[in-house]
Length: 337
Image (cartoon, rainbow, N blue to C red; front, side, top):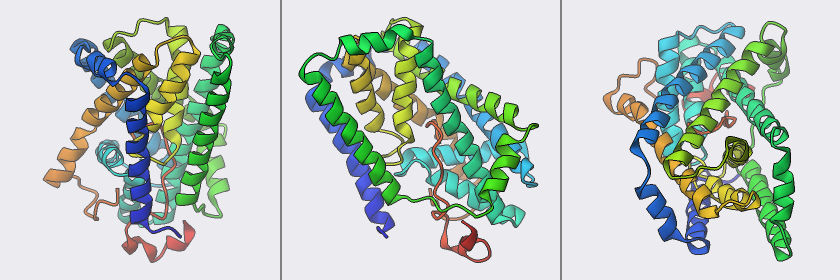
């Protein structure tokens, strides 16, 4: 088993390395100019949408926990989600905040195993919706694939194939660094919370709304940095870019997101610098949107938690690592994770 500190170091290295690679391969000055000239009105609009994003996500968590018989007041869910989002933004992996809120909720309810599974299933609902959104946006843009093929002449095919192999390798590395241990009863809980007749459409609609809010924020910051491509062109590119953030091998998706944007934007006939600038702006907006969680952490106003920061958001949904909560949680339910 790789030590946690080494896993964190690898993820930091991946983020910084990919960002440095983008700076070398692309015109970094043009990216910076696009960011400096971003329209603040659009950026404020994007920040406003992130509030709705957190409210929807917290409600989804509360609904999922309730299906497992756990009590979770909505105001507490919102506070916990903001705190988890901030931790996910500043610590490697992008899932440690979710592991922390699962631990705190489990401590308060006396059902750590069920609370952990509730968070895993709530995030899995979002992952499934993200994959569905990629398929839907691609289906809605039938001309995009033809455009991609048109912009892949000669050696670019080999270059894209090599990059795809690199991304696949990073994904396999992430799985190696952070294996998810699932409780033997997770299947029954998944049916109860996600697939049952009285839960399926609620989960599907809520998660699609959450994913749509991610895409809306990205689209708005793309407009802010001056990208005026049609919606049907940008939507699948945004979905594919956000999909890369599901790989838990970076800090809040930094580097992976920009690398994906640099790859898919040119395949649609758009400038890579524009996609990277929009991706960086998206990361900055999401980081700012998570700052209420920093206030909760700093002021000690979170009513449900005082464990060490074992540390979503704003990132597309990634499954938390159940083994990440503090060692104090290893008593009654640790074997169930």
